[in-house]
Length: 453
Image 1 (cartoon, rainbow, N blue to C red):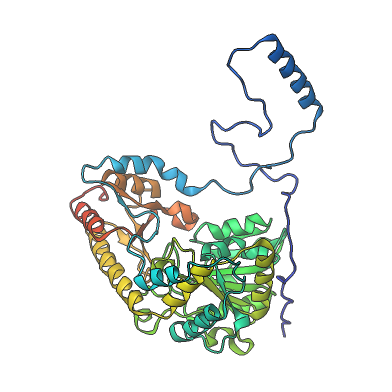
Image 2 (cartoon, one colour):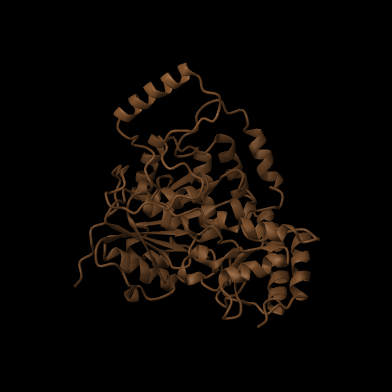
């Protein structure tokens, strides 16, 4: 009989501020100053007094040790910066650019949210980290009604400042550090990788659609954390209750926690998920007899309610993990503003605006799916939910070849390479431009031969 491992992540405040010796420095972009303490050349007029002052300063500077901070970053370059030339080319299209690269909402924030925000605008005091009783009650009720997760207590829920904050900071907040392995989907939003690197842990991409027994892991290090993302960004894949249960069982045997980013859960397009809903990691069928032990689920209001500008999100699950996250957030001052908490309560209690926005995205998805197919592109057959199309083209076209072809049509998309090696030869197309712009993109795609070889 296998003995379940001791959980690795815990409520300790574990900070790792210094990169270890020998870590490779990131290549410095052209034009950046060689060292933050380096001398600035002054090309202005120089008199004798200024020369003397400069000589004294130089002598004094030479006697001081080199400045400690900032150290070389352990982070990769921000991927979106590489799209600048493609954006510039797309902007030259005579009918204007269609931006389908970044999944940022463009439709109006619902009135129910704006009214709640305005009504709570007189908020002179600090909000609490744990959120008001009203916001916690709203999260508990919504999780039961929309996600099928019943019986949550106030100790098991928490409002957060958007869900990207949690994706980036949960490894820190749970005490992960050097030597820990943080697993994430092989086609994934880059922030899962970044969150591991921030604490000196090792990010490892794995195929979360596959049996975890088949995962190839580094020989050194212990699995501390497993990230799931269902529906997936960028690929739109949905994990079944049975698949998540397999992963949870595998993780518990190793003492690891499992965290699921579920921010696209309301956007299911195909069956069986469109009717029964996308299952949550906290579904009773996933955790089994151990329930929510070692499990956390994240959700964001950015997509379903067009609240990306408000930064309104939540997490729920194991009360021990929630307590650990809350404690670090208290020390760090990570507080959801009181007016945003009021808006969060309002939108969680209103389904009408969610269904209306989903209908808008459905129309856009159908238009773009039909137009890209007519152009010779193929959407991933398992891309059945979420905010994106996950498109492949001719075998000889790389992801950036596809991005370049789209730019010729005045359309901006994201190369699959942004999301790991599994994205090679693909692009991610979002549903987040206006109806008029989406229609323009569809028209251009239906009349092009750029993707046919």
